[in-house]
Length: 346
Image (cartoon, rainbow, N blue to C red; front, side):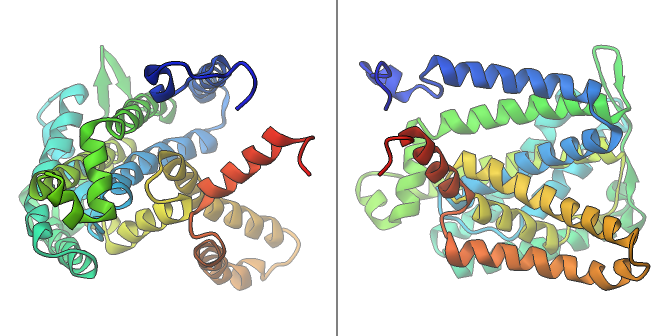
């Protein structure tokens, strides 16, 4: 801690951004994000929208898995419920500020149902139960044609807010950023409450948590409901962004994508969620860009290197698991600690 940064009260110690420097950096970041859709290219703005959606969904999964220790392989199913709920409501003229919480609530209701067995099963058995949900919901998405459109998918009307039609990536970027900021702030504050501490106690040792008076069923269902709510909102935003969705998007591969994101970033950490989402979103794009550059010099570069992209991506993830199990957040903390002590570091 630098001289002059003393924390003299409990409220100051618990504050999210305790110093003026941190608040200044936050204000600069928010300003940059607000202006980026106006100055960024179409591709970068689109990538920003996808990153924001991934960040919301990954935060929900981290609430369940990282903070509460409830492993879920059905996160994509909750996103699908939110997406198709949003499509059904939007087609009937329901405004976006009503659609988003309703889509999240519908996913949360499914999460509560799925979380009921969590009092009896945990670990690998719970993961298998959520995996069964994943396959079941994909089947429902494909067969319930009156709601989901079946394998052909369904269209999502453009969102409208205060008379403005959000029919461009730049306009959607602002909506996604606002939702991501509010949900991240909510998750950060949640972990400072009694509920958040109960989640972490259950993660560390559920039997000891029960002995201390924590209602396991209540808090496990709450974790499932909250994580599923985040996924539902992310799914609704995804539908508004792409404007057309098919069941093929909400497969097991997407659930594994989010699980990998929170593991690479760091379980039980919002900073880890952000870093993991950025990594999982931008690294594949960077690899594709390298292949495109190589293709300009070698005609067969695309044919040779395209299959290698997934291999390189997988190796990077495995490398984090082996050499830095605490994820990118731990690397970031080490870098901050190094520069915080420099030049007095021995």
